[in-house]
Amino acid sequence: MHRTVYDEDHESFRQTLRAFIDAEVVPHYDEWFQAGIVPRELYTKLAELGIFGIEVPEEYGGAGIESHKFTAIQYEETARAGVTFGGSGVHVLLALPYIKMLATEEQKQRYLPNFVSAEEMWALAMTEPGAGSDLAGMRTTAKRDGDHYVLNGAKTFITGGVLADRVIVCARTSPPRDDDRRFGISLFAVDAHSDGYTVGRKLDKLGLRTSDTAELSFEDVRVPVEDLLGEENQGFSYLGRNLPSERWGIAHGAYAQAEAAVRFAKDYVQQRTIFGKTVASFQNTKFELAACKAEVDAAQAVADRALEALDAGELTPAEAASAKVFCTEVAHRVIDRCLQLHGGYGFINEYPIARLYADNRVNRIYGGTTEVMKTIIAKDMGL
Image (tube, rainbow, N blue to C red):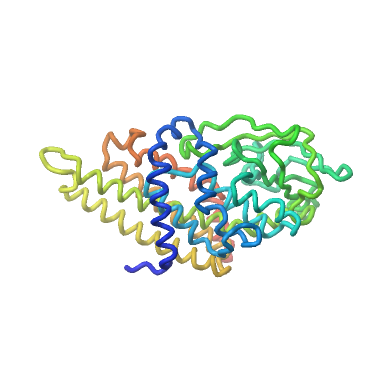
């Protein structure tokens, strides 16, 4: 079926990005994989390519394009090559919407030019060691002290946390109310170079190994009042507004991984021989890949429909949750079956299918677990 979600400008961007990945990422990726982090220079090169400014208004140095389709192409092309861009996805997909939605004009003038140029890389710090998905249970506090807030607490699973220069930190500025435990959370754009701000362990993850994920701690970190994002105590409502775009991103990324897995498996079975024949010549191989292709086609349709709804401002939380559940479950099944077709080599990290298998697993956890997504969908159904 003809895909209608992209136009000529999108496909031109795809070719530019594919050439960049082939020249600047693929030759170095094994080294980055072993190191467990991408070099900061990659972010500078991505900025020079214009990646970070696509959705930033022109007056702050960006292209002013209000669409997630260029981000979608990035997911597809990195998956196709079996690589990632480290923690840069958080910079654009997670941090930027909060800046655009909540920052004052003065804050945008300070933040966005450096955001576009990668002079300041951003991350988002919500999760805490003892709270997990229960954001209302966070214990990090920010107490007003004159023209500053004093930040104390800890965060974990912070993607991009090692290389980040500024982090949107969620903290309690007031205790929860008896009738509303979500009340009292505020958002701050915290300078990662502040006294008392500490980057702890770079977490040793099963997958997404080039994406630096860290523990952060704050001990009497003084945050200027000018770095409060939005209104005090209203942070939980802000977090909810951006969850559909985050969950769409995970859904689209999962679809792209599943499509890449079929491509990797098809190429492998056409080259690998056993019993004097290619693995591709066996009926089981054909049936397995055909079934995988059918599932990927369905996931593409769901991801594209969600993308169009997101760009139109119509993607609801329940629809985003549904897309995330469907696409991540499809990717789980497809990637597993494609790894099986690789045999023993599918378990070796030098083959992209092995890395893809590990990278994919977190899709059903972060951005809200599959179980949380089902709860959202069920509630929307009136159950």
